[in-house]
Image 1 (cartoon, one colour):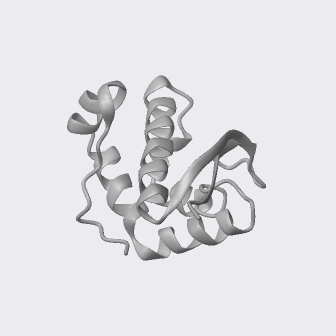
Image 2 (cartoon, rainbow, N blue to C red; image 1 turned 45 degrees about the horizontal axis):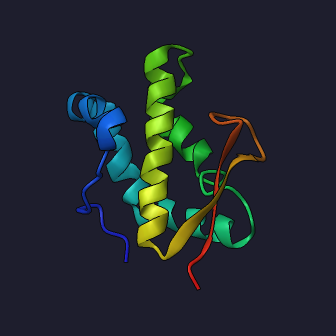
Length: 117
């Protein structure tokens, strides 16, 4: 079901940043790769936050996310929105935000999803 050709719909908060930031565009393609979607789905089925099992890969792929500046914070929030769209496409619905992640590499918490059925 995963396909990098799916288009990210950034919404008003992220529209300009996504259009002008190549890191954000690369992050969307990265997260849509089956090697990232699979652990997001697996973690979700285990009751973890969707980004819990992929944040180490994100950290290695995108050094820009380690900066403590506003741009990095904005990118991380945008990645959360990207994860939400991917999880919806994969058949999950938002359950709750603020779920602590197991290793605080990039995120201290993230959203959890549950199966639609």
